[in-house]
Image (tube, rainbow, N blue to C red; front, top):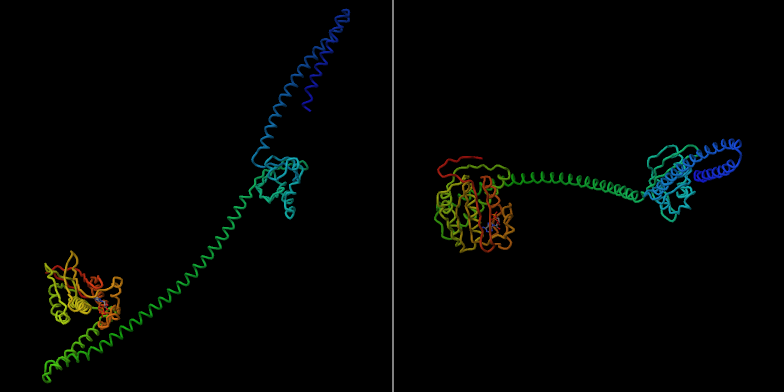
Length: 474
Ligand code: ADP
């Protein structure tokens, strides 16, 4: 309507000018009295002309404003059309009135077919009723929070669309302005994450159940292990007590047998034939061996029962080793094994129980004698650091396999009884007792060996300074 007003005003101006021309010419041609009346008319025409000019100016201003408004409208339309988000305008029933390019692309229809279509036609038939109800609800608010609706575009699969609606107008002139965002991928990711969460929760529950089960099993195992250990400890106690009693019972007749053998040997009951003397010697050897076994069993039993008593004093090593020579040299010599005790250099002393140390050394030398073939060699040497002294007993015997070194210190472990039946005497207790005795004296007993070359056993004990006074009993 505005556009047609400017030509009308221009036409009105032109008509006015031609009327004025027509009136001016006859006025100059008529006599003066008449011309005076004509002047009034001319005056009016002049005024009309001025009014017409003003009108024309206003019309020009109006059309300029119109042009500006139109330019703005085109700009906003372009913005609306080219916006990356989808915008729709519908009536209150969801009938599409306006749609930008993104919206037509979202619903898969060219604009001309899309306009006038109800949005419900893009909703799955089963969900249409709910959609209409939702639309009614949304119309009740001026603007809504974002809701996610499901639309199926033409020739496409269902999409999830996040929608915000702004309501403009009231009653029948309600206009709904839709801002739509395709969130299908987001929705799928959210579903996937939810699914993963469910699976994760299930796995956590499963693992927790597994753990609970494993814990219960572990507790049951621990309990049965505790019971087994208690049973084993009790059995070991009973065994030790039994062995202690048994050994004790053995000792008395053994002492008597030693006494009688001694009597026979001394010739109190008449002198002995050489063969009889040899038999008595064999009896004595057998008794000595038996007494040593009984003593070992007794020692083991008292160590197990924690009944070991120690008399810790300063023990000069030279003295200890010389008395050992007196005791063992003959035994080694019968097997053709030489014994060498290297002088300790400056006098060395250990803080130890002299009797227990002697027992350990006798045991090591007896083993050296047992596991060294005749013609072999045994050497003892001492050394010291600031805090400790070490006595090394080295033999050139059959040796011990590398992997078995630790095992030989366990009670009742014997390595050579199968391959060398001649070495089968013994209980496998000597080294176990020796290690425990040395440990009780705050020392250590270790071994190293090369099969076929020989073995070295080392007793390390706390060092005592010769001349000082050391006393401790335990
Ligand atoms: P036993 O000598 O009564 O068998 P031990 O506890 O003294 O028991 O020794 C355990 C095992 O260690 C022995 O059976 C033997 O196999 C091995 N053994 C000990 N000393 C030596 C050694 N000097 N040389 C080689 N093997 C040894």
